Amino acid sequence: MAGIGLGANLGKREARLLAAWQELATAPGLRPVALSSPWLTAPLGMVSKREFLNAVALVESALSPQDLLHLLLAIEARHGRRRDPQAQGWQDRPLDLDLLFYGDCHLEETHLHLPHPRLHERLFVLAPLAEILPDWRHPLIRESAASLCARLVRQESQSVRKSRWSHAVATQHPRRLSVMGISEEPTG
Image 1 (cartoon, rainbow, N blue to C red):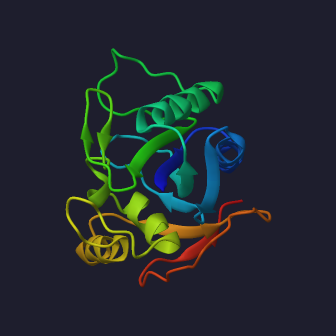
Image 2: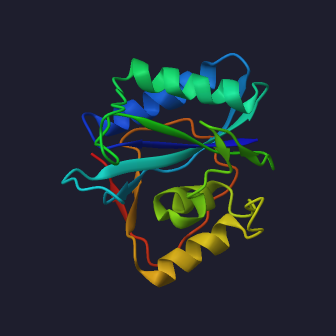
């Protein structure tokens, strides 16, 4: 199973995340497993006044990790994502898709690191991941998503607010986890 982080802080954020989920769900070589609730988050590691909407998707993949990454980059580009090699730091974006993990795979290539090197430091990834797959264990740290999420919540260095999709979405949740101290609100 592969985990994919979805995020946007420009334009119609919810529509873009759901369109990306739909593209993943219908892509050859992928089978959708689950989509988390949307989570509202302040920008992390960048200066912006635009709040992010984030989610995590789980897919079964017959694609290699590299081919899955290329698919994610192509979906981003179709939704207006332009990567500026001259830019300093992270930028606002209409869609951001990150390959978070691919089974227990550990890779360190020029353009692909698995698991994502900052996954365990990002509440905007861990909260939605813990919601849909709380027992997932980080292949290097060997802690569960729920445990890593709870640690960041206790540190209070980042904030996320659980939201809900504005209309019914086929998310195929295997189960949900209630994360104490995180509020829920609509995205619309």
